[in-house]
Structure formats: structure tokens, C-alpha cells
Length: 109
Image 1 (tube, rainbow, N blue to C red):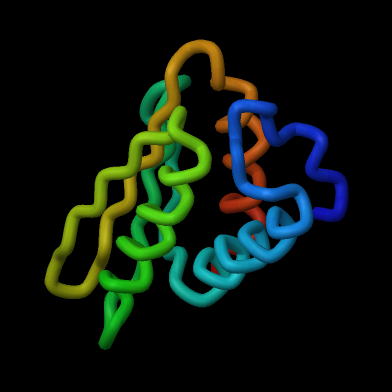
Image 2 (image 1 turned 30 degrees about the vertical axis):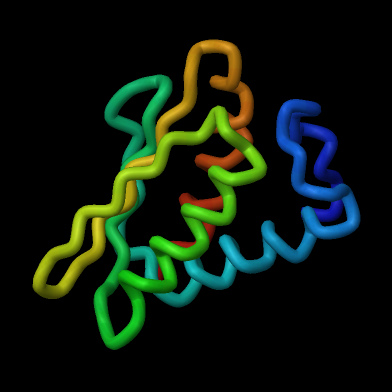
């Protein structure tokens, strides 16, 4: 996605770095996503295929993202074969999750 106008001003990641961060998320989704769901309007649930270094990769990316976009809340749940990633936002940032959800739906294997 080259148009990142949906990224709110409250996200302090420098504009020139945003496409790189989106590419990191897209790569994770395309390589590891097995099942996305939207159990609540303010929460996205992703199941990612596990493997060597995957949990650390997910945790690192989530930590870096929340450092710049504090409206995100990430919960990583390790499992034997799957890594659960819950992404939640507050009511004011529901539109961000609305933009993120289709990115995950389009990359299922």
C-alpha cells in the first residue's frame, strides 16, 4: 500500500520509515499468517505459524510498533505450533484497525 494517509498523526514513526514498517508487517503476514479474525470491533486476532525465531520476530515488531504508535495494544501468545497475536486499539483509532484488517485477510495461504 503506497497510500498511508490512514496512519494517524498520533503515530510518531517518521513518514519516510512508514512504508518500510508496513512492508515488515506484510512480510510477516504473507509468510506466517494462518488465520485472521475480528472477534470484536476494536480487536484483531491473528494466528501465525510458529517456527524458529518467529515469536521473537513478532515480539520485536510489536514492540517497535507500539513505541511509535502508542494507541496499539499487542498481546503475543506463544503456542506449540502457532503464535497468537492480538492487536487492539481504543475507540478513537478503530479506523486504523479497519485499514489493517483487510491487509491480513488478503494474504492467507
